Image 1 (cartoon, rainbow, N blue to C red):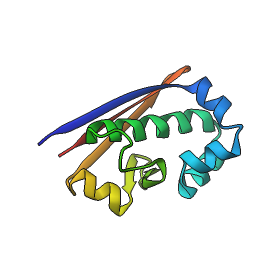
Image 2: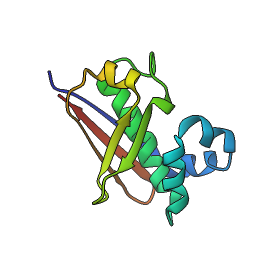
Image 3: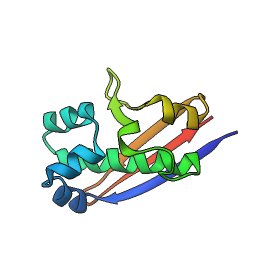
Length: 117
């Protein structure tokens, strides 16, 4: 069965949240925080990651019931394409099929789209 989810996030809202270390630790994995630290515009990247996590749980159809922000890691492959790395719990909820994610942003908003087979 094909499942999809989409989410859009205001970059400025995420920029303000990034000032709170507890927000960073709760919502972003260690590897994501390292990625953000390496970016020239971390708020845009963080907003895209946030949108991708929201899009993933929408594709699951469960929201964040049974899975948390730390169960979903949005990373980049060697060419820079975003990829989801899931905890065993999140992988089980996803059903083990193929998952693809696309992230885009403009000056004010980031959007992500997740497709699962």
